Image 1 (cartoon, rainbow, N blue to C red):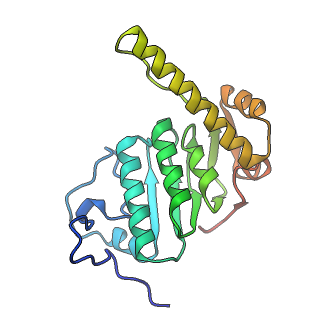
Image 2 (cartoon, helix red, strand yellow; image 1 turned 90 degrees about the horizontal axis):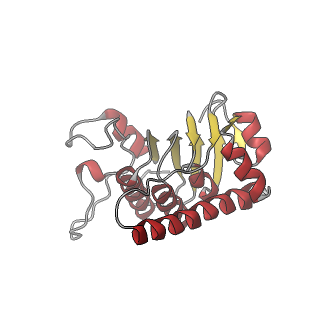
Length: 212
């Protein structure tokens, strides 16, 4: 089967992705992408419809990740493999990523290649299939948010919205695993770590794979 060319050609589209917006390019430690340059790793990832996401999943990284997912979705119907190593992140960013994974028409398969914990676990609930490498780890952790700043009314509103998002987070995990919300919440408050085999038994991933 002939793979589509990357980046896809949109000659008349002013929103055509270019440079650092192309999907498949790994996130650098600082959270921003370097200027466009020859990158054999990026080109190989693009060719094989692979996206690599590492580090703290914040709003900027989620935006880049969603852009790559949407672009690959427009380029073809073949599955996309999302390799995750995101030990923590922001709840809103995790939901944005999970919703995009759920909305694209091409199947998205998530492979946990390191530690994934806290809010980024929501991404697993949206994937068509989720897998872990043998030495990867999942960390059930209570999502945290900064509510400081602003007047008392603003803080109260943000706290209410935060609690709603946290409840949604636990409901998604419960629907995926078949476990009770209270059980998952208690495990998260204890910062429970799950090995690959334990994560399969818990219901958060489908299988352990030696070679992603």
